Length: 378
Length: 131
Image 1 (cartoon, rainbow over the protein chains, first blue to last red):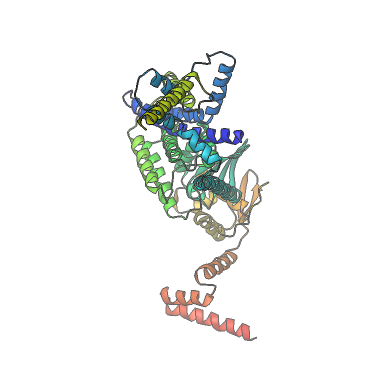
Image 2: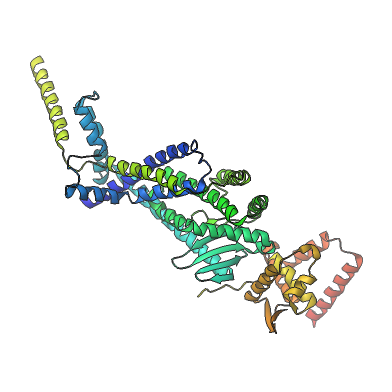
């Protein structure tokens, strides 16, 4: 039971952390504007990836911190736990509240977890059922998408092959994209693009840039985490932000590297978009692939259009920002520190600290006093 | 390693290439490009790729003559016409070729000569069936 409880707590913590850190990321992104880095998309992309990775590996920070406490590298009294800090502040008289109300608030989460894990309520069973069936559905959708992707690859014709990189031509797709397996990488291009050598070159350069940026690996990583975060809206906002930055960064770097004509590059994006509108789409949304343009027609179709507009505007403004490593380090280090502190702050306290015993004593004394006064009145 | 489903139909560009091969017979990449409309402005590498893809799909075969490859259609125009009509009839005319012909006769502005030719064809076909 304690293992299940630990897993459940870790699951809740990681979801809370994702929400918290996305908020911090948003503030950091706003601060980048006055620093003249509003269009430094590569830096922003790496920051976002770094912070997301930190959120996912946050259980390691907890383990590391508990090891430091165990071997007395940090004092056992030193705590970053939010509820411990609140209790300490309360006992120091920094804010006023009825002690039993404070205790109620502080134990709210452990109470909910206990009810939930003990299946004390039908609601608990219902929510657990929803989470499990949702995760299974998301996994099934992922498996179907991978199957669809495999079919496209199998039906494509080989154009070039270098090492583990396959350049394929497909009659069934309308938007070029790249994907990978454990060993092999693929760039798949619609056959109608073969007749326009300029567009073809730009498309291949774009997909190569995605590979250089490790966008395929990030996309697969994000898709693999979807069953964990499927109910969390922040995950989708995070993924959308990642997709935007990935494309904006890729466009800028392709133009910086290859010196293509900006207008021709934009025309190529619009042409691919136009071609995609005339073809039917398969169930593509969960496919671990990185496409030249996003062409969702369903829920986020307006976002796809706005992303395309943003990309064209960003390309036409011609402002190609370098990727300053020092600036990157100057921002990522405080952001990672915030992730670590937040991770430790939202943990449930392990045991009874002196402060908590003190709070409990105050509550008991209060109750005793109340009881005595009732008896006196009686 | 990769098992491919055999591909039966040509894309628009592939059909353009096949029509040239059917019309001019065996051709090199350069010859295909020469036979194309001048405004097409297709790069040599693109044409070579399209022909190679046609070869992978087994619509053409290549024969090495010296340093250059010559491409020859493996699929005849008649076979492809039949396949396309059959597909059209199945998919769009509920597998009733008579509706397909009716649509053709009604909407295609056929001349008197064309209609006469069709009538002669039908009479000949009916005689073959009676025999």
